[in-house]
Image (cartoon, rainbow, N blue to C red; front, side, top):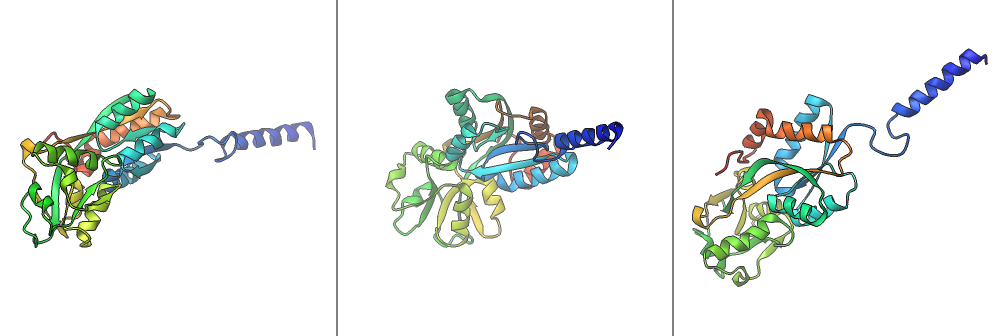
Length: 258
């Protein structure tokens, strides 16, 4: 091989090593956003991620869990891009614990509601009915998810004690609570209004009085650990822009303060 041909081959090999996905130091080569999202946001986030990729070519990789579990996952990931749990409290808590939040942006609101089997066969009309012996109750685990953490506070505002509920089923995610009522494993559960909307074909809703309710404010935190903050910011802008807010609203999520 002559000198000129050898130089061309060597240059091609170096260029290929630089651009070929998976080569090099093992870091992400393509544009991917790692999002830690509350399980209750999944119906909207799945659609948001798909629409965002179609628009920009950037992949969003969501990791869903109850917010109490999600905060640990986000803290332990050295390349986490975004953290969007079920309430701003967890974002603030993560920053207090580890100083990992660079910025936070409002996205949506969660309003707790009571869901019951279609037709309301147990004649449930409010929070007090959760304490009846003939009613099977499902609640989120207080330390695992925001709806579980909030449910006890809502009951307390009404002069009720969560510990007085007889043998409640407890879940790590709000989504599972909806499934349990739908599948007749429970008669009643406290969930987000958006979750109730996604189970509208099989459950009815009993509103919690506004003065006894506690609204959760969903914000997304940009992580200081992000390796591609430009892509992460683009997804935040997409979620909070007109197109993203329309997707959230269509999926039953409130984009305006209740």
